[in-house]
Image 1 (cartoon, rainbow, N blue to C red):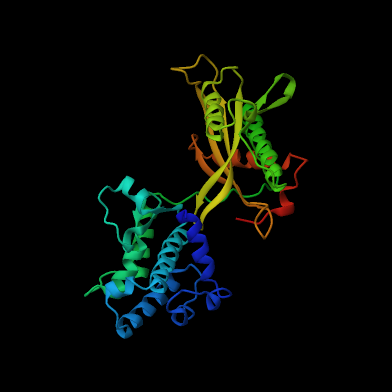
Image 2 (cartoon, helix red, strand yellow):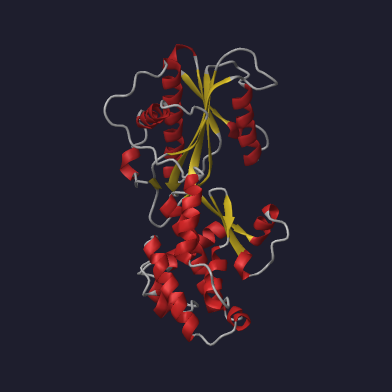
Length: 351
């Protein structure tokens, strides 16, 4: 199973409603004493629980690993510790299995401590190793709370925090941006709403681009009509067209279905790519850019038992580092609201 999906399942089992009912999980009584609210204080409670277990448990490390409920206990705390670090620090988190970790760290030993790692910011960490150290190391040096606090401090100092969710528009729009940028950003937001409306109906979404035409008109191009129907090929063709701008237009936007890694884990997201061009001949096959912007529109699929929901847009990347970035994202969001065929607020579920 994909480790990101597995993380969601295990974390759901740690909720107060589910935890008393979970089967095949060791030390449920002790776990129910912890308030799993994704805070550093909860990690200190876990440290206390592990200390008590260490003093009372009469089981060697090898024997412990032979019991599946005990392994599940470590796996659950592994996912919780990593996710808490990401949520407290506002970092992206992506879970990896051992084979995926080994692609980045050749030679990493294959054991429970490294069976599931996570990328937090730009660091690969193994939270289970800290948990097992607390239980079995002759002289444990790390605590869950201390490990989390140090990593959060380091990644924050390195600028690894994710940008805040894009706030909903309020007041009058900033008219200081050039008309070209305003038109492009609002067009990209409109395209995002177009895709989200399709997903809200429970229909699949393929790559679709929006291209401006003369007289203020815009044309939608559905890449499902290109090639042999392979999704990755369609996305690649859409990205190629963004890069080349063979028609010489002022801007192009593209959306495709994907994922975004957020502090609370991986979430389905419609990805919106915007390219605004400077004009002039392409350089080495690429059109000169005035702006490159990528925004993720996270959503809960219509197939989910709770039903469809859309969440706050998330900035993924922006080539413009200046203070105008906030105004740019505001115009993007206003473009979402300009789509009269989809009521964004009707199923908006916050951040």
